Length: 114
Length: 113
Image (tube, rainbow over all chains, first blue to last red; front, side, top):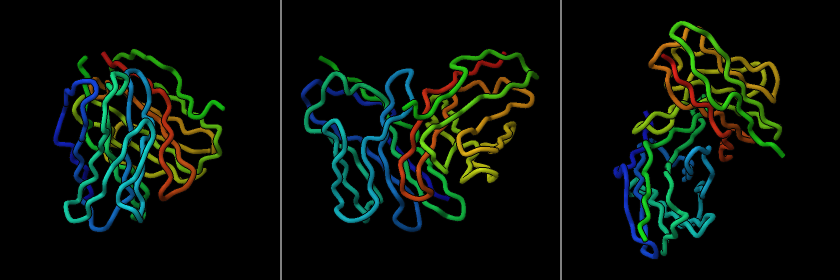
């Protein structure tokens, strides 16, 4: 069965510092990969997605993610974190396997300190 | 453009009561789904639909029913609420059935006492 693992429940970074959120997936083939962000009391918003081609994808708000097939990873990065980036981040995988489903990781909550 | 609209935003039920969580989208999306979000568990898929008249179970379907009579609406029914169904529920839709991202509503926070 496909699964998504986000090893870090929460991460704290200083404003202006770089950020990397980890995501590993388990699937028999290359799935479609997504990162979503959730601000308090809100639904999830798409940050970026990977389907095929260039393994480094750019998203909104200055985020990027790199797909590494050999490591089954899709880590999210940002060079310089802003206080407004504090939120919860979810990695997700999707594949049409006779029943289309998107499966989410447990999420990583990002805290930003001044 | 309203996107995905969920009602109500908050609901408190007693054990054994029934209710329907409403979800409507105005983007003409074929795919709609319901998730529940619990602390430390991310979002878990309850039910989904790939078009009007077609529904299927997700990871955690027990205790929930769905139907899809129109493209726009995808209600989630709790027939006999249990405290284990206390959660935040999200409805989501997407344009196509493969690689389109999900568009989420703002959620319904349900408490079952």
